[in-house]
Image (tube, rainbow, N blue to C red; front, side, top):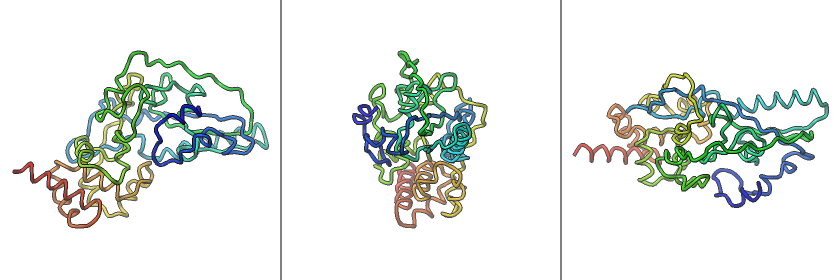
Length: 298
């Protein structure tokens, strides 16, 4: 695991110390076991897999309400309390995208699923629409065995990525990923144009939706109305995203993403003109979108 992390691209937003990320004893004194959990969320997806229309934006269902960080944490804490009742005095700690451990690598080693060519853990009979979390304990438990990959020659996930973020199986460049762009404060005109084309607000699911192991649920596709969101105050926008996994990036970046998603929507032109009169990242993005409007009208 250490060798694999050390040879990987350095990911954004996390401390990059492979030795620490592979050392549970550094996270919990006396740690002897790591339990990897997977909670499915495929029921949030629509079978139609329809894309947002003009005036609508895409928020990946994984990031919707409730916020999976707290949702999965609560489940793992309940598991820890159950273990504590069985073995009084046991120590444990929990992380869900909130600690040094790489959830995917531990889930892979624990046999929760195999690693797809797009790096997502694919759980048999469920797919990759799962949230992962870890419970580290000083209780010694018998290890499970990793699962063999069932991807075969399929590379649908790799070919589905619009920006070619995958150069090959498990060869992923996060700087080419639209999901990463949506969290970056500094975007190039090319990146802005691509995000506008796909009307993304937060998250991207192209590679997962292409995977034949993923079977969406029966949810109705209900994409957010961009005009409504763009007219919200900062406090209202924060309240809208309050219980989602998107709020951590802040209302300023989210509003920038909304502006990009609104490009080409004449219903949003009035609010874009108002936003363009301000200053900062959102205003500059609105100005660029309106300039594209003007070029299209000429």
